[in-house]
Length: 285
Image (cartoon, rainbow, N blue to C red; front, side):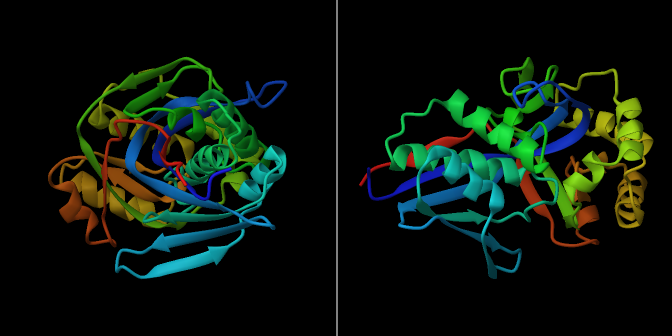
């Protein structure tokens, strides 16, 4: 066992999805399209007699808010049979459609494997993280996407599914009003029926085509609420391609005019497309 390990995972904005249910966690998940973002989470792990999780979120004004506890991450430690003090650092709101619940699990699993010399492969870490996401109903496809970077089209569910990745140096911009409790959407038969029928036929290959495909899905799914609608209409008026973050009460957009339009509704997050997936940053003593 080493004294400290640090790992990182990118986030992921899902633009459209379709739930897929199988006999176990490996084939339960979703298909769909999204973009892996260079903003994500960093997790620092140190040995501890008792498992503990702290989550530090740096807001747009620089203020850091810390919360204690995370049932999914605590369950991860129980499953791995280890005990550590984990501190998560991020600058995006958790639960707001940026794929951070999956990112926390991936980075935590990577750091714990290094800290306790468990020798877990990337595929094993991703499999466990995905199964925990499904179990806690915090996500369906973010883990699969965050294994690598780029604009992502997930053709089959699960972390070993068929995934197309289109590499690009583009940047997205986003504004967020806060979280949508993912399980309230996933557990609603009525909402999921609309989501299933809204699934698009096309497969985007760059951020702009992803946003346009996602916008058609968002409209057909019925998930757009009043505040998101106001942002989308402002973007439409300025000719800025934009859609709703899935699943969060927010909007992501592309183009040079996007930051100016979004700034009228709140702090704007600049999100470069990630070039890599989750990784170990420091596993030394």
